Length: 349
Image (cartoon, rainbow, N blue to C red):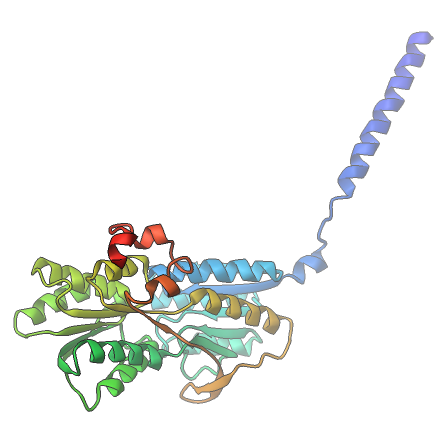
């Protein structure tokens, strides 16, 4: 009898302990189906990650959106237009609240974007305009000013005269014609002569290497305007093989780390810095507000070929050896990374 009594007491104690454990576990919040459905869903499709800066855009956007209570599904189209269209179709099927597009082709992407809008999904054209799509927001930098800043530097450096080679990205990128326009307008009325305008399909940097070599064989070149720092790096590689690196003025954009290293080393003259952290963070805030049905007010409008769409424009910044410490070091890249190949004290002498 005593044994049975002890067993009964032990059993009661065990049940009590288990019940207590279950009670504690039940205190953990569990989202019911309605709460899960209320989570803001954002789809984001990138052209590719071939450019260093796109990885920064992605990381900042996702972090800010998460902070604001949204989930972001990031897709990489790897430069394939059909793949990007397929990704947007997927976002439509998944009933995303907002779709953010870094368009591979500003015209060809329009039909599927229009389809998303008809489904009631908000669309943001990120960094590159989507034409004839009446997007809910176009957010980018002042791309004409990017070209203007490049030309201003080159005009000063070359004393308003010399032969210029322009190596741009593809015309399917809406920013490219804008940058070219800003550059060409700024050198108008000077003796800066554009001897060639070339385009790198898919922004493939190797194009700049072959084009630079080709022009060097038949032209005297004083300056090379490159659509981004990847192109600038390959142009400088071609110059270096002829011991001309640092002798010919080269400008680019994006403030990539290797470009900043070349600037302090003296082989690249300038780059245009676009504060992508500000762009990505602002875009994420706009996206979440749109998903909540809040009214979003952009600073101005931009004509997309059919409609005036809301346009949020940020300013780019010219970066040279003279201001790189103030603008870039400690803000965008670490000092030890920028001056990896040249001691900072030696450069500043």
